[in-house]
Length: 224
Ligand SMILES: [Mg+2]
Image 1 (cartoon, protein in one colour):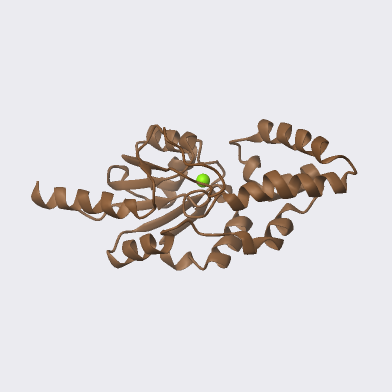
Image 2 (cartoon, rainbow, N blue to C red; image 1 turned 90 degrees about the vertical axis):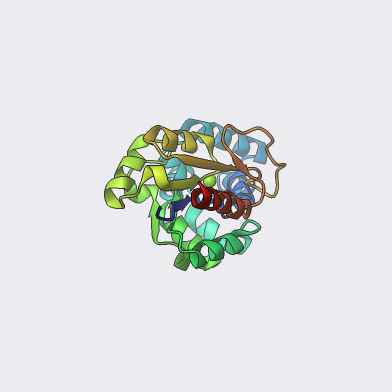
């Protein structure tokens, strides 16, 4: 059997979601408050209501959308704080293992193209991936089955011989609906928040737990 294709999400899976939490829940409310001359509390209330309206849509992931919506250059704001972007523990160890063992390794993110570009550049991770896609270029967010249909058309892969790792269960649900066999989630997407205990999918406590998972499957295939 060929090595399975390993498809990773980016934010909250390979990268620490603490950065995104900081940008959207701390920095943007502050900048929004000073830009619109309102209190931080008012700003937070307004943004929370916007976030609620657009969560899990393609707009939610678009810097351009948010820049237009709140009147602040959100992409520039993210790049200004790019020194806070960080890999999750074991990220490079895992990617090095997959590369050395010849696993096809893909990145499928809801981050928009410009967000994806600056983060990959800051983290110097592009060379680990055979395929890199943003849902913005696909035209559908990963929460929609159409994302997977379009990805399959662009880059054919075997859903029965594939692992998809993502910290968002709604995204894993659509991948499951599409037929991806092995779905894995993340215990602690953000270092700033406590780990989840209950998930509906097998969970990686450490990213490198995936190595053990894949090695067990290989051993099973050899001796079966
Ligand atoms: Mg994620």
